[in-house]
Length: 466
Image 1 (cartoon, one colour):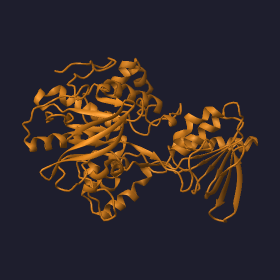
Image 2 (image 1 turned 90 degrees about the vertical axis):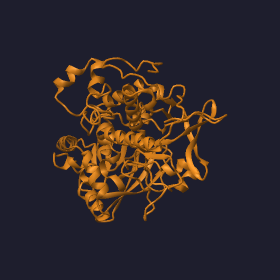
Image 3 (image 1 turned 45 degrees about the horizontal axis):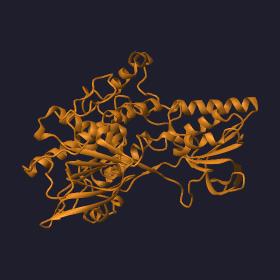
């Protein structure tokens, strides 16, 4: 599927990935497993670029006792290939904890453990990624009126480099969302900043934290700060009466089934809106019931003992915040009485969620060839390929930002393994339809046909061209 280089043209890859979080790590694994089972003419050349210097996934939220909200079976591979040697169970075997995990009788690992699994998996395919490389531009390569390739400009410590692709897979993750007019500072944090900034407060004896939000991250931050700083008051601000429990019952969880993506994609717009409303309590602004019970139990105990450090300012909202010489002054307003309470605090933590990165911002003039719907949202086909003008022959695939077309589960970890399989199938199918008989080339460190690692081995062997 890849092309030989005429003259000084850059080497053409079948697939270039932008970002190397869990989604594109899974994509790299899927490509590697495909290449390991086919002959060389059918292999896919792929490479990925990641701006971070190493793999990292929400590192600021890896609280020591926080657990995943999805089953370990929804790892990077199992729902696509249950026999894969990149599964969470193979990771446990390599770490010597498989029996211990089985005896634990728990489907939901610690988040820090699942992050270690992601790092382990990323390490198996690190010959397919260039860390410390930022994609800064995408330009169309036009021939006879059609866009046959995309030139991707990448910036690194060595300067700018140019790479050519027949397909892009954009997996740039999420961006922290802050309230309008508020910027992150050393006193105004987003939850993603927590562990990176909290150590700087050690020894300063903070007296009060304010945590804004009603979801899982907000509750985890409240519990963590309450435990970490036993002399501080923790004020939780949210517009509800209390935290709402997540619905993780068997029937409700069917919204996360792969088949639910088919149903949602085919549904009329009014049905899509209703489905999102019906099942919002499976994923948005909801908290694990065990954590809710723990926080309530702690609050009640403190009231009995007269040592209240947990304060819940419910049915309220934060209406103003300013930094002072020693911290932050926040104004909290009751939604019922409109009465305002002014609180001086050391830090305000905003658990205000995330927004998907805008893929069009990366695509430059190529974005003008991408189609949008009546509401200005990106049109995305069932195979996660962006709908484009017919003159653009390249595939642009997105891993994220597809809730409006594919539903709640489409960009979550629950669907990662299945999603990358569908994208790879689409790339292969489009390649077959193109009928390309061009000479194949393989870039240095990209698209190597390496055999999968055995459970317990530390990494893929390098240099096996198969």
